[in-house]
Length: 312
Image 1 (cartoon, rainbow, N blue to C red):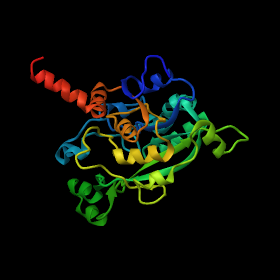
Image 2 (cartoon, rainbow, N blue to C red; image 1 turned 30 degrees about the vertical axis):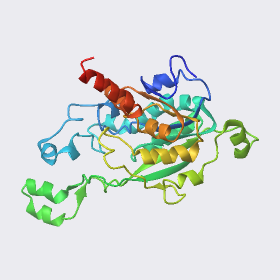
Image 3 (spheres, rainbow, N blue to C red; image 1 turned 90 degrees about the vertical axis):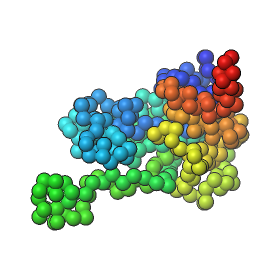
Image 4 (tube, helix red, strand yellow; image 1 turned 180 degrees about the horizontal axis):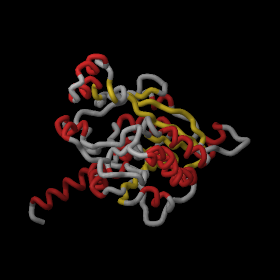
């Protein structure tokens, strides 16, 4: 299917460049939690305008603990250049959207986890590349930190008690982020044919409601699947295997190929393997690649550890 790549593997590679090596119409589903472009970490800064405060911390953040580990840009920005961040994110999405379209089979789905603030830019980039935007799903998170600072506290620190009393109950920031968008795109199938025709020709295009209901409560676009006990903590942007498996079984049949160009700690690949699908993942972070490989083949890593323990 591509030079140097084998199926059912996680590959240490730049996912944007690696997809260019894949054959046309080889994948049945692309399922990926792409960077959101909101500065969650160094890999999530997808614009050129930074300064020393970005991803730094303040004494207040350090007192608050892990919830405020990184300092992002305020929505209003620190400069006029910051107003261009959404456009730069759209350009970044456009840098790979056309290649995703090329490697998908006609009627195949691309399902993208995207941040709430910039997901519309991702939609435009994918539509411009030729995708059809099918739907926006909402994954309800079981827990989410509330990072909205009280305005009254700001005024109290300034010694302005009158303003603190006047603005009691007001906050700076957002409401608690209890959902994340999952953007569902499809590659157009041939004009003059139907979805049923496409299913017969390429094996994709319809969705498997019966399989989906094994994981979710109803055939609706609100998703509630959460983490299994002890599953989390492997990656800052980790998603539940159950959730990913629901999306995989919704859109593919057994033995079809699931591709994840930004696979992180490998949750999509684990879900695909568990569901009896073939899979291929690319990840640029070597530590995340090792985590994914261990999750996909724990028996191999246990055997290696035993050999080390015996001094062999």
